[in-house]
Every structure is written in structure tokens, then in C-alpha cells.
Amino acid sequence: MRRRVLLPPLCLAAACSSTDNGTVQIVITDPTTFTAPPAVTTLSVFADGADGGAPSPLATATLPDMTIDLGSQNENNVESFQVTGAAANGAEVVAGSTLPFQLGELAGLTLPIFVQRLGQLVSLPPGPPMGDTRQSPLVAEFQGQYLFIGGGSDASLATTTQLYDFAQFALLSAPPALVTESNAPLAPVSVAFVGTVALFIDASGAATYFDFSGDSAPADVAAPVGGRFADVAGGATVIAPDGTEFIVGATRNGASATATDVVLEINPNDVSSAAYPNGNLAWLSLSASRLGASATWVSGFGLVVTGGSQTASGAELLALPPSTSTATTATTPTVANGKALPYSPDPSVGAGAVTFQGSTVLLAGGVVGLAGAIGFQDAGVRTIDVGCTAAPCPVTPWVSALPEPIESAQAFALNPAEAFVVGNEPLTGSTHAFLLTMTSATEVKTAVPHTNATATLSPVGSIVVVGGASDIESFLPPVMSTP
Image 1: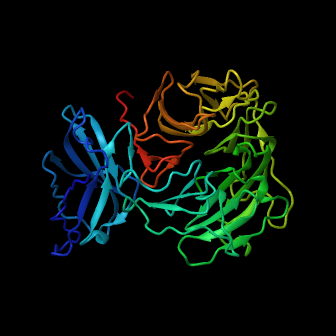
Image 2 (image 1 turned 120 degrees about the vertical axis):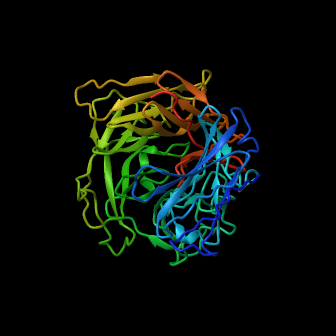
Image 3 (image 1 turned 90 degrees about the horizontal axis):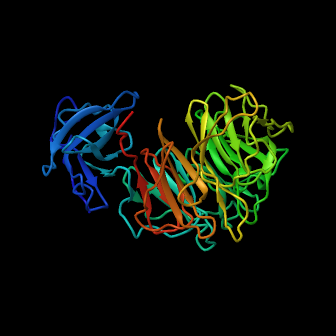
């Protein structure tokens, strides 16, 4: 289902010519995007410049008119376009945006913008069926444009990839199969991207550099002195604002996973080692071994790891010096230790963690206990303050229990009063998504059923849900009705 917002005459230079015109094509996958109640009556187009300022309004149109003249634009500007749709009462109900681009690059071309209803999970273009149905996929955004999908629990698919291009809102037609330096099949369980180069770690603890640009061949990676890649294999990746990445072994879970206190640091700002040209690798150590823990980065504090232990502190902080790390380098065997925070033990496994406000971390989902006659106990939704120093630090409950218990969860902060969490039922793997407030958890239905899906942020700022269905779904939060 496709509809168009046509931009001509869009003059991209001071002197307009017949070739300096471009077309923006609005793409929808749900035929009721504009007509579902409340129906969209007005479309608006904004330009969001690279300077980080507020989006600038360009033009509006009243439906069913779908042609918008954006007037003269400077072709040297680097901007992204945003489209919003409002109902008759002025409430914003649909939205979509492009990646940043130089306006001159649009001359003679068609630029797609995927537009969707807010507050709903909607299939990305082209809509189902799309891609494969691998469960528990490994996903990562890279190069500010692409979504990598690989690995997963299906051995027949784990060495294959899907790459979704958010510039064209389409899957690439011929994504590469993953191989090692010796051309052996590669099934990754952890990944960290620096540019187009991925550091993949497989379940055996072997590591490989794989360049998706094709500029270099796959290369085996030797572990730094003082640790093994096997100690972090299966761990999630946390990215700091300066681009430093951390593969946190303690976040891994599953029948074959073991507790660990090891963290691998990938520092793209340090290219001093010829062995690690995409960023020096170093080992860090938590204060305790954990299994199924949660991890997030809190600006001004560092890497925060929570849960995953019956006896250790409920949360700990791994704070790095501002300019250099005390981690193990390729030649130095000393490790930096995490600092236990004064929280009671948190035995939950598989919660989603996200920095919420300042030093506050939101923990959503996760389960406590073993499967049995009474099943799993949901850990609920709660917040902690990593700035707390006086024991015992309080855990502030939001929602005591989710409508369905979930693990392997990913949490996302939407605004100062709302969050979003995606996770899977412990026994069946059925995927659920919930919109969270301090007093409620409302399920957001997926467009198609998913099993053991994974969620992440997309390059255009939406939340995407991938795995266990031949579909990739996108979520944009509803506009808050109250501050």
C-alpha cells in the first residue's frame, strides 16, 4: 500500500532548474493508517537540521490533497524530513521520518518516508511476508543506516544475514553469509559494530572481524591477554555516548549459559594496537559473577549491571576514568573491578534495563524462580538510583506485575513518564510488548505473532521488533496528552 507526497517544484538550489526537483514518497503498510479513527485530516512536513535544533516547519496539506510544495531549499543543507499527520482535533496520530541527507542528493530522485500510526506496532515496508522467521536473532544498528539481523537459535539460518536499509525502507536483496577467515560458516552470538566492521563472537568463543562494506576479508581476532572471548559469548552489547562498546557476559542466559563477571571493552577511540585496528580490546571485571543480568550505560556514572544473582548486590557500577581505562590491554593483565552498590540482591533473570532520567535506571520484566508447578514469578517494573550511596538503597516499584511474565527483555525510555518493553514468555517464547507508566502496563499488540523476538532502536528513532515471524515491526510512541 503506497501513497505519495509529491515535492515538485522543490528547488534545491538558489537558481531553480528542471533537474533540481525531488519526490518524497510516503509509504504505508497498514491501509487504515490515515483513515482509522481518529482519521488524519492534515499532513505536515518538517526539516530537521544537523545542528540539533527544533524541526523547522516546511509545509502542510489537507487530505485528501497529497501534494505539498516545499518551496526553495538550499541543496547544501543536511537535513532529515519528518512527516506528521493530525486529526481534526489537532492531535498527532501518525508520523515518520527519513535519515539525514544532503538536499542536493535528492535532485531527480524519490525519497521514501515510512509513516505509521503512533502507539501501535506496525509492519515495516514492504510488510509480511518479509525475511525469515529465525528466533532469538542477534540484531544491531550500524553505520547510522542499516539494521543487521543474524545468528539466532535456528542452526540452518544462523550463518545467514538480513540487512534492512532505513534510507530506502527495504531489505537488501543479497546480504552476505557470515564466514571466518578460513571461510568456515560463522554463527555469531554477540556483536559489536565499528562503522561497517562487525566484531562477531560465536558460541565457542572464537572471534572474527567481518566488514560489510566488502573492503576487507574476514579476519580471525586473537583475545587480549587476561581473558577469553568465551567468557562474554552470548552477552549483550552496551554502547557509551563516546562510542565505546561493552559486551557484558553477565547478560547472557539460556540452558547452556554460565555465570560470569567478564566484560569486553571495544574502544574505537583507541586504534593504537595493530591487532585491533577498529578499536582496542580490553577486559573489565564485575564485582560478582552473574547470569541473565541486565546492563545499561548511565551518563556521568558508567556501565550499570543489575540482577542475575541470588547473593550479589542488586546493582553494580563499572565506572571508567574519563580519558583512559584501567582495563586489561593486549599486554597488561590487570583488570578493573565493578563497584557493588548498596542494593539488596536481585535474583531476577532477563529484565530489560534503560537509563530513565539522570541517575535513574528503569528495570522492566525479568523472572524469578525456576519453572515448575507454579511457573515463573514476574519481577515487575521498578527503578533504582545508581547515585544512591546510603544502604539500604530503595527499589521504587512502578508496576508490581506485568500482564504476562517476560524475559530476554529490552526496555526503552519514551519520555519522563512512560517506557516501552518487549520480551518473551519463559516457556512458550511468545513475544509481548507493553507501554508502561508508573501505574499501568498496557499491552501493545504485535501486527503478527512473534516467538522469541528481539527489539532495538532503529536508525530513524523507532523501536523495531525482529524475530520469530516473517515480519519486522516498528513502534513510535503516542504523543503525551499531559506533561
